[in-house]
Image (cartoon, rainbow, N blue to C red; front, side, top):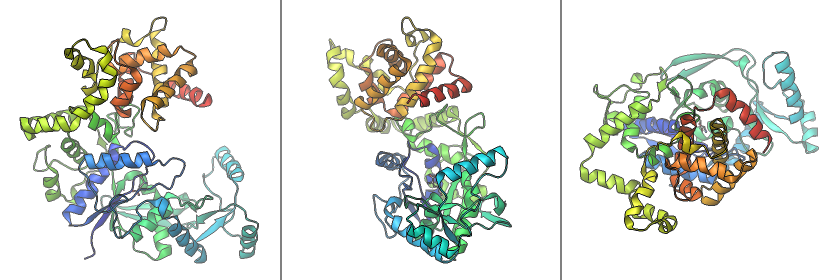
Length: 494
Ligand code: GLU
């Protein structure tokens, strides 16, 4: 039998979502169960959104969770490079083959034409998508346009009728109409591949035998299968996991719940407990017990037992499970080591001292002032969140814009944080103090605290965001409608 090979293919475009860890967990379980290999591939083909900082965060977050890979950009391996931005030649070469074989074609439509087309389709309520304008250009026409040096993309020729049968290990056969799928761009004008092109070429060249990913990709399967067919390659076996959901059944998003792995690390969760909890999102308790180890899961694993009912990520239950790990899985000595490895260590204290030294009369003043750095949550009082001369209802919208501004900070240091928050004050035309006062209360839970920008830097981006959300809720929150309106204004003014 050929070797079992699975991969995770995250895009480095933001903080690492727990959904990525959830997927990596099942990848690793499958690999371990069959003595296979787990590959890390960085899908950084979106040049405008990909950042090396986020790639670092992916490595750090998944390693913290104990979900290590056998091959990847940072560890090497026989099928590299493992970063898609370093493989563009390979995709162009493969796209060329498709064009030569009549499976793909160059498309010269301008973005203006596509905009008009889209507007018309929306107005007439007809099917959205590319209309095949360049699909049947003659060889001479193509040669002429190429000679003129016109910008173009390469599009996949999709069948225009018939049904695509998608085989999913968890779901059986899913029938999707080809007519619903338009001619997908494979290579963009900048010469970079789209996800669909790169994923198929790489899964094949990297000899991936099983693909585990979120169910949101099922709809892309016809494009992928048409590509496999065009190349004459055998597709891997697909397994689409159900998505993680908020308690109200909506897709888990950072608007309400902390979604980044880094938040859970910073808030002091145990990686074992988080892993266990994520396993329960798609797998029944092993041996009737909610609490089980990774090794037990590997031992027990059977794809037929995967449940697809939608997986509600319930913080209360995670907290309960995490508590069990601390009580039942750790000796006091181990807990002490956990605390040191987490934040109770010299390195962390040393980062606080520069700005606390001026604020102490005795050493005994240190701990009370820094307690909020270690807290899972703080408890700000409504009156501390509202600066003098401001109304309570003015604060949640301001906090929301602060969240957006801070989300954009790439290098999470004092300078970037300060610039972002000054931008917020400018946006509202408020004195900076009216922004910083509520933020200090939100982050520390107290009326006064150590310097704000330094404190936020040390708390980390994800913990900062969560505390701002909590503070908004103390003041009654912000309705979806109001948030949407605010976002328009915010985006327009920037
Ligand atoms: N880059 C895609 C993502 O970030 C990968 C999807 C896949 O696994 O095929 O989810």
